[in-house]
Image 1 (cartoon, rainbow, N blue to C red):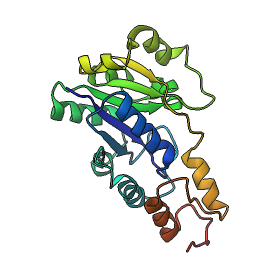
Image 2: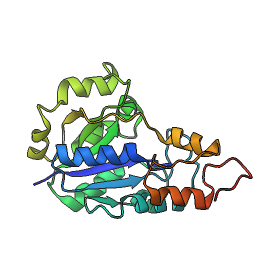
Image 3: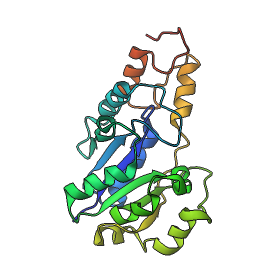
Length: 217
């Protein structure tokens, strides 16, 4: 059974770094699909700048023409803190023994000790860590221990078990972040070519990330 990918995050906003990662992991891991799961109320970081409806609209606009990608808004609908473990529990109940792959960046993985019920994540899914520029693999804490004890022998091994392994993916490393995109918009510059055109138009049309009192086209 082909693994099912789960890509959570704020997507504040979605950009080509997210999409390129999802594209490459879909190919490299032979995933059935990749579900983008926008967080509603992140417990360990600042609240998103764009509201949930705008972030969801940008995400749907960005992936709408790619049949490999889907948008799962369950964390926005659920209410309360956006705990990934709850989403994985729901998906596991829905998908039975299908392998589930939780995709995260190196920065998120390095801080996995702080995640709610972090010890339960690998009982529900595999973790795939997408390398980011200038990042190194953590050696300490839960992140380092899981790399030593649960690291997959290769990408193909993820399809042989429903959950339980950590795989580090050597995908293309685009030095692009949502905060960098927001900074471009806040400076009054155009985020063209940093994200899909459909998402860019929503940013410009709503004034998201502009300085207070500043409007866009």
